[in-house]
Each structure stands twice: as C-alpha cells, then as structure tokens.
Length: 110
Image 1 (cartoon, helix red, strand yellow):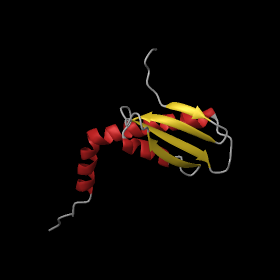
Image 2 (cartoon, rainbow, N blue to C red):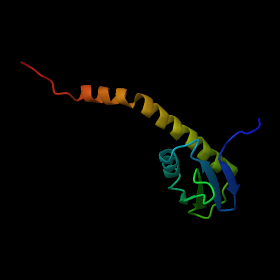
Image 3 (tube, rainbow, N blue to C red):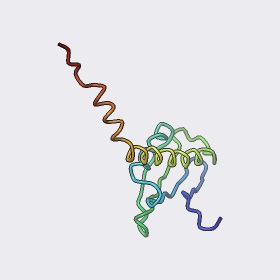
C-alpha cells in the first residue's frame, strides 16, 4: 500500500488540523465539508506556503471538548461524500435541471 494519498491529520486536546490535497478534492468540496462541522468547531483554512495544492484546515473545539480520532475520521469521510456529490452533480446535474424545468412548466388547457 505504498503512495496512498489521504488527508494528513494532526491531533491535539481541543483542536485538530487536516492537510487536504486539492489534487484529490475541489475547493468547493473542502468548504462544504468544513461547513458540516461548523456548529461544533471554530474553523479556518490556510494555503500551504510551500505547496499551493495543499490547504491546512484547523478545527478548534467551541466547548473545549477533547477531540477524538473519530471526529477526524468523520471529516475525512465527509470529504469523500462531498466529492462524490460534486462529481455526480457535474455529470448528471443537467438531467435534474430538465426534470425540474418540466415539472414547473405551465399547464396549457383549452
């Protein structure tokens, strides 16, 4: 299992940092994933100065709760979920738009 890419996670008592690779996830996907955790954490993003394809996402607990490894795993799973949604929308979103357009067409009656 050499050269497997995944977000790098650094854990602390009440904060964690995930380094996300934009070669794997789009900026919109990262932002959508972060939003899902914004009710639990103060969050900020910072582009890596040495590599603009990496972004450091820092999460700090709002209630000084201890952060567990499960939370970081949930965030990594959310990245995958949001990327899949993004990909499906890019590929098939036009079909949804056509269905909605057809559903809201005015009914012509004589």
